[in-house]
Length: 265
Ligand SMILES: NC(=O)c1ccc[n+]([C@@H]2O[C@H](COP(=O)([O-])OP(=O)(O)OC[C@H]3O[C@@H](n4cnc5c(N)ncnc54)[C@H](OP(=O)(O)O)[C@@H]3O)[C@@H](O)[C@H]2O)c1
Image (tube, rainbow, N blue to C red; front, side):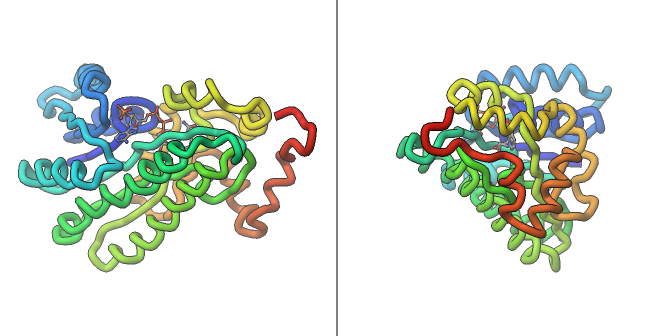
């Protein structure tokens, strides 16, 4: 089985890669930093089953459609399209709206919302032509909820859910499944970075929902990929919040009241 994982050099993407390697798949990782990619490949190769191919890596910025197209062409010219394509590349910055920097608005939309679109556009035709395969995009709990401190990130992840849902419909007649992974707060290098600037009140609200390990999320995503169901929601608390959000999209917000005038942010 061929598995391509964007954002596979660390965090949730790396955890999915570890499951894929242990299952004996041929794994390719995409991310930007070649040093992190090489380090991830080395540790994944150490988990490889005997006789299975080495993990391949490619340095690609998923927000750049030209770079994505070139890397996809190289991938496809070397062999078959991915059987499973996990798009995990993305990042978060939590901030109250007036504190969000202009460049972060653009970057979150370009990477989180643009990335899965460019990557799917580069691979979907070949997967559809073959008539099989699974694309798993990565949204978040904030792909179906809206919570204070996360307005721009939430916009980027609602875009992932909307895009993935429409693409699922479009590719179904061609035998290609599309699902979207919605992790809760998850311990990863990216989570540690976002915590450096996260407002206290946002961190407190987030902790109330529980924090998972990347390994737990990776295992869940690997197990559920291609198995039916559009939303892949690894946390039990999140599955409850998801059900509630279907009844009342803003009802969940009552559990985590935001700071008002003069309140501690
Ligand atoms: N951790 C959480 O709490 C959480 C919760 C819900 C959803 N998510 C989502 O899950 C996904 C993974 O998050 P994570 O916490 O595992 O992040 P992470 O630890 O920061 O790992 C992110 C991975 O994506 C790569 N990446 C980032 N920007 C990229 C770009 N423009 N082009 C190509 N690769 C890029 C990174 O490598 P390079 O920097 O070298 O490119 C790295 O391999 C993201 O989409 C995130 O929004 C995370």
